Image (cartoon, rainbow, N blue to C red; front, top):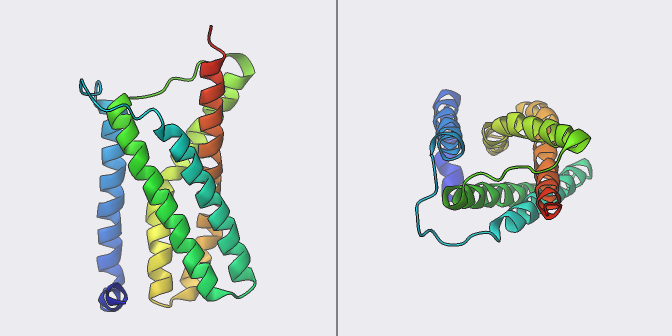
Length: 186
């Protein structure tokens, strides 16, 4: 693969700087869309189907991550590699669709009350805070694997995999909690 050969000559410092730039740019754009941008432009296309797509992509990512973990435990390295690339692809597609949806439609407010509201916000806040870690950690894990630095790869993924799984699974939970709170409205 041409990309693999290109990475062979990359120093750790160069990678980490590039990773920081990409991760900060993604986080900055996400913050802009969710926090700073006032309203969606008038006449945007109706993308209300995307939250269901996003939940599906998160579920697929979680399943692929779990299957990738099982594959590496069984020493099925090629299968593990394929599953992890597929999980990253599903998560990247989720992020793209998430940004497009929020660009066009803005934020979705949770309508529930009481204990469910507290549970929702606990899940949402932990989901958001941990999701900040996923992009740089996943890119770094891929980098370590590509460079055949498997000790560093394993050390990182022992932390990154559970976080990535949590973010993917809670993404699905958040979708269903938002959907059920909106359905409960009169």
